[in-house]
Length: 88
Image (cartoon, rainbow, N blue to C red):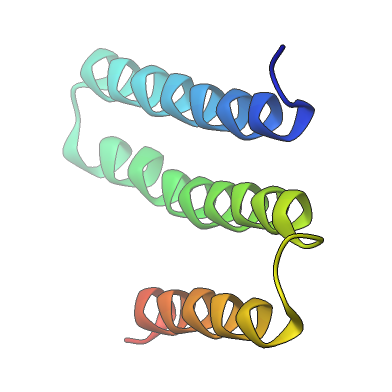
């Protein structure tokens, strides 16, 4: 039996991948650099949101198994990832 949290995380990743494929097909259909760039810019929102949501689900799933100190280390690592992504 699959864990509900694992199923949720996998479903989000499948949805994200489907959105990426659809966006690529739209870019091919539009066949214009400026419009393809607009589609690509829209995807910039999807990636971090999926990362944040799947990470949150995972942390909820393992929160009872981790000590408070280890949970803080995981949160610090996730924060570093977002700082690296969002920093210009």
